Image 1: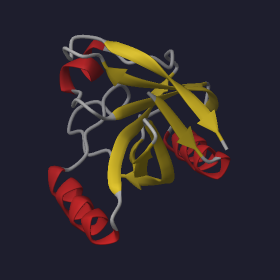
Image 2: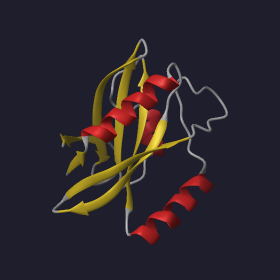
Image 3: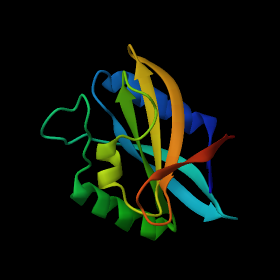
Image 4: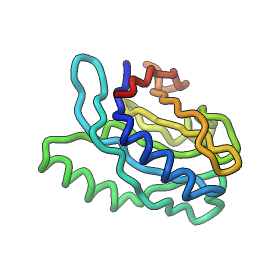
Length: 140
């Protein structure tokens, strides 16, 4: 699987992550699937509602996700994935991320070092949902 993300949306993700630093930011990747590819049309910011440490964890309010899915249904769009930042950590999913991941979604992870966005990667669960496999990001 490959994920296509407009450069304008990547800039939005990076700006969100830098603003949130040293906390994790999070958001939703919205768009459509076409030819075995996720085509992102929007990266929408969500609030990190983690009640504990936002320095290394994020949560998205489930009710916000329900409202978003209703909105997307009306527009004929899908939630393709979730993005979040890793402040001063590599851009690969953590064990915590793996334990909370949903199948069939992309997980974009942006490393932010000393407040500067560095590297964006994207991941999907493998066939048995036991590990993440990196997917190619096509910037358009």
